[in-house]
Length: 189
Image 1 (tube, helix red, strand yellow):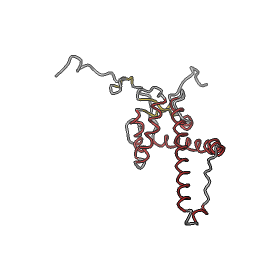
Image 2 (spheres, rainbow, N blue to C red):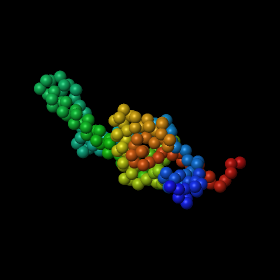
Image 3 (cartoon, rainbow, N blue to C red):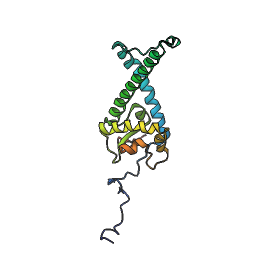
Image 4 (cartoon, rainbow, N blue to C red):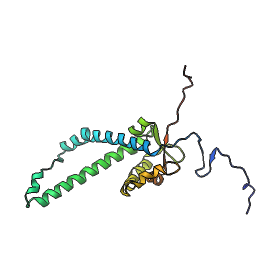
C-alpha cells in the first residue's frame, strides 16, 4: 500500500537507521588501529598495577609470591596448588576491576578515550556519535569478555563490519571513530 510520503526522496545527509544526521566525514577506527591502542593501554595498566596496586596489596598483607619447593613435598602438594590457584584468581579479579575502572572511566569522560586511544586519535561514542555514560562504558568493557572467549572472534569482527564494530561494540551500542580534525580558524602559512 502506498502512502503519501512513500515517494518522498530521502535526504542523503540523514541516517534513517539511527534517526541521527549522518556525518559523511566520520571515519571509523579500523581493526589494527584499535589493536595498537589496546597494546598501549595494556602496557599502561601493567605499569600501573606493578607500581601502584601490587605495593598496596602487599601493605594490606597479600603476598603473591609462591614457593615452588612446596611442590616437591607430596604432603603439601594439595595445599601448594590451592594456594597458587587462590593467588591467581585474586590477581585476575584485581586486574579485571582495575581494567574496568580504567576503561569505563576514561571512555565515559570528556575525552571519550583511554590513553591508548588518545595517542592514536580515536574515541568511543554511542551510535548517535554522542559521549557514552559510565554504565554503557561498563557494558562495553564486560562485553569484551565475550569477544575474547570466543577465540577473539568478537574483536576480529571490527575488521569486517561496516562501522568497524567488534562484538562488544554491537552489544553495548558503541562506535570507535577517528577524532575529527578541529580547525582554530588560522590558516597555516
